[in-house]
Each structure stands twice: as C-alpha cells, then as structure tokens.
Length: 318
Image (cartoon, rainbow, N blue to C red; front, top):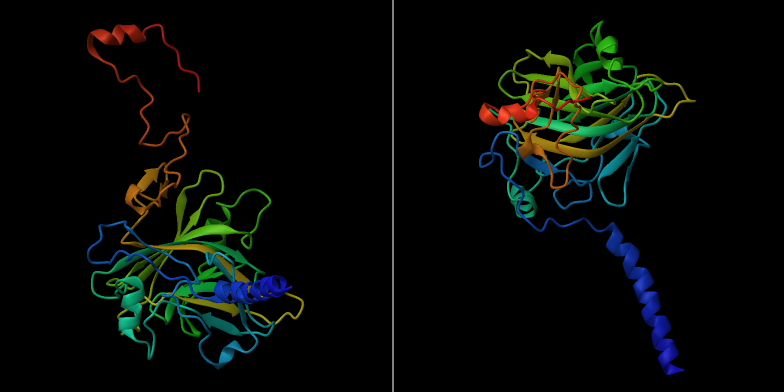
C-alpha cells in the first residue's frame, strides 16, 4: 500500500510539472551569428517565439482585448485584434527594448542585430490574414514597418501613422503571383528587405507555382530621423482597418527568418530565390525545370573535342 501511495504521488507531481515546463521559454544553447562577423546573405535568426531572446507581451493601451497565440513549437504566432476600426496589436520583439537589459539579451543570443549605417536585412515569413481589412507588419526598429494589407495593398507605417500610402498597381502586382482560386488573404510567403541608409523597404512575394520571389513594391520614407532604435527589434504589428463586427481580425505569421543584406541572390528567370548561404540545413535549394529559360540552365551538351562525336546519336526530350 505504501508503494502504491508513492506511485500516485509521483504521478501527480509529473502531471503538475509537464505543463509548467511547456510554458517555459526555450533556451538558446548556441551563440547565434553576429551581424558584423557574418557574410552577405547569412541566415542570422530563425525566430522562435518561445525562445529566451524573444520579449513576450503587448505594447501601449490600444491593444485592449488583443491576444497572441504561440504554437507549441514556437515557430508561429496568431495575433487577434478586436473588431473595431483602427485597433492594433504590437507584440513581442527581440531584446533589448525600452528599459531592457542589453546584457541579458546578449547572454541569451550572443549579439544584438544593429540598426546602423550600412546595415541591410532581408526577412522572409509565411503570413495568413483574417480578412481584407487586416494589416500586418514587422516593426524593424520598434517603430517603422512595411504593412501588408489583406486586400493586396502595402504602406509604410510609423507606429500608428501611415507615412507612405498604397499605389494604384499594388493589387495587380500582388495578385499575379497567387495560385488560381486563392486570394491575398491566404497563406503566402513574403520577403521584405530593409536598407538603413536609403530608408527603403521592399516587398517581395513568393510565387505559388515556381517558388521564386518576385518584386512587388519599393517604399522609401524621406522623413528625418526615421529609425527609432540602434537595434533590430522585430516587433509584430497587426491592425484593423475597419470595424466590421462580423469579421475576424487576425494575422498569423510563421517561419520568420532574418538574413544579413540581400538574401535573394539566385536568379531564376525574372524571379529570385534565396542563395546558398541563406539556407538552413535540409532546405530545398532549387527546383530544376528542364524546360525553363532560366539563365542558370545550359540546355546544350557539355562534352567537346573528340568525345563530342559520341553525342551524335543522343536525343533530348523535355
């Protein structure tokens, strides 16, 4: 009887500890690459929203009733804002932030990502938008972001103010790279490049058929003192653009990766793919289309000289 009591006591302790462990942040066991020591195109961060370097919680009083649901493995988060016009949710981000301890960040991650003269970044991520009137952006410095809206438009936002509006051809460029029958709200992969010196962000969209990124829009903000921080803070920003109570105002982002410089190096026709140094182990490097007119594929025979005669009887069908 005594052994039985001990068994049930131990089981109870285990049942109490397991959910507690699941809620704890994921510790970074290895030092992440630093910006200055890395080559152009290097993958600097494969963001995990449960990691110790990621700051939990919302910012400012406009986030009333907003929620953030992080996936079990930490690779995605779903932000929900209330169905009221111009409500927003600003959530998470890298340490350090206002009042944060830089030493704590560096101890967890190895080095901060700088926002300084000469700095350039590329971000890639999957995004699913709840409806046409939801906007999502990543506040690179904790203040400025390129906002992607569910209706196929994009803008430059600074905190709560649109600084550069949408353009007439946004929709045309955007929708061209969606699979037939899908919409701008469906899950899609995007790339955003950031250039500190030129105060420019570019939006790229990944084609659903050939897997290449295609240029959509470049936005330059000429205001003085644009950047708000000397660190890449990476806060997530979701915003309601209308107040329809019957709509769901959500933005779900997943597989957020940050690279040094311009990571879209490998040209394929008119599109671009991530270069070798921007890939993670096990990533697909390239989908080869033998009927492609891409400039990296040579459709001819490569054997020359005496051995070339051996090619006379060969035929190639694509």
